[in-house]
Length: 209
Image (cartoon, rainbow, N blue to C red):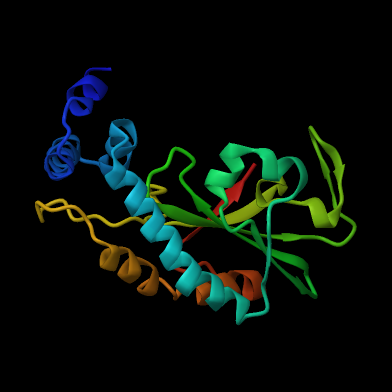
């Protein structure tokens, strides 16, 4: 609560960025996105828009070139503001000999400008979920699977991909988000390797429920 009151009283986005950098350093972890989500400045909205634009321009087409199809949110999911915020591109799907390959580009549901990938395979015939019961193959989401994968900037700490410039003294720019996505297009290769051969790239971790 003290953190929210102290930072929330700052109206200058550049000052927020510098205060956040100090907090990150003093606590030994990255708090920048969380603080800006609390502040709720227009700067946060701009950064998220830049990230979405860059993902749409670079990462989504890279998956489409590999045969993935963008499947928008539909039905009740399309009515959920939380899902709209977390999955602005819907889901990426591709038929394969394994079943249906699934990739989800997930953004922070609270509005911070960061993303990760969720990866899995929906088997033919669907799955039996402990809570939801039988789920048809076409309705499976990655988090329904008993075993899946995540792609993060730091898999050990589950740190999402984000622009981090703690010592610059200035907020990130649109170009920074272009570079963030462009520099991580190797994720497409890592996804292919884990789906086809079970090879974990440097950004991937196994998730089991």
